[in-house]
Image: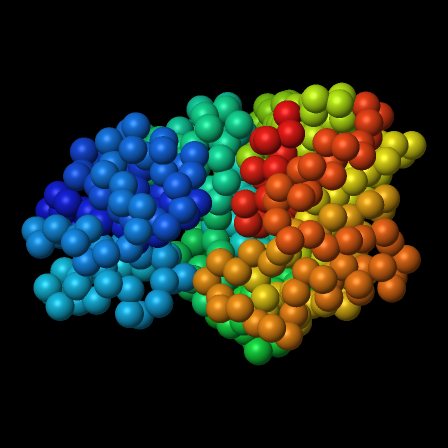
Length: 428
């Protein structure tokens, strides 16, 4: 078990990542000396620098001081990363982000929110109500919370609320007392073989729960049924929660998120009316159907993190419900070559609630270029499904088109898990 009391200096590889940055913030609040590297400057890295971290804008062995006590890294890095290699050579203890979460959760009553879609919003909903109900939770969420602009809340009690990511089975490092599974879908197919492989990972997570623990899910969901068939814990069906009216967040999927959150809050013995009124005040998180402002030409600009076909459909359905008679223009950035190629047909059918789709180049993230897939191929497939779509070579072309060809009544949504949000920020 990691003894944080005896650790003074921590270095983070990939410190700008939404999860890794939360741990680095926690270390800063514990008065540790924090450094970290990332290839992209962002609002997150700028904020960390202001909070006291030393930030490097590239990966280099020189970034890692010899007297570092601990290196925390994102699983997205390669094994030949120079900082990681140096840490191993020097015998410095290394932990993945998820291993650090596991170490942190050891001393807490842990609520872990897992699922292919909706886990960030559900975690944020739980965080808001738990804070409002004075449970003083510690929270790590995969986005920036509206109230604080941070992905971390540090409480002073033994409650830990954390988003649990399934990528590379990361969530298996956690030790949850309450587990939420929002849903299970095909994703991260650059790692998982198929849906059955994903379900096996969730089954292993569920097997960690004992008789005194709780699993909040939809037990009648066909993709969840095989995961929970041998569960030893108490199963709570969130679909039996009454609809929570007057939510500020849009879409049926957010109602489902709220019901899952409410089911957890009942287990935590939060008073019903307090939970409902707090959920009704919830205003989403960074990059989840986030209103950015008004463009120069008067069009309203939104930004959304949706990058999987299920998420794209849900976000656009919510947008169409909110704006039934307005033109909805999407600037979409596909995320990962592997995801775009493996989910191409499903993705191409996901934009039917949009009037115009502008496809940016694929955001590669951790992947090398794959010549067998491109934004042009995706745009052509979208067109075959009856939607108006075009591929663009860079962001500046998309920005110029949106400035020249939209009007006050239009709705512009930048969409994707990469850096497409920069277009929204440049338009307003």
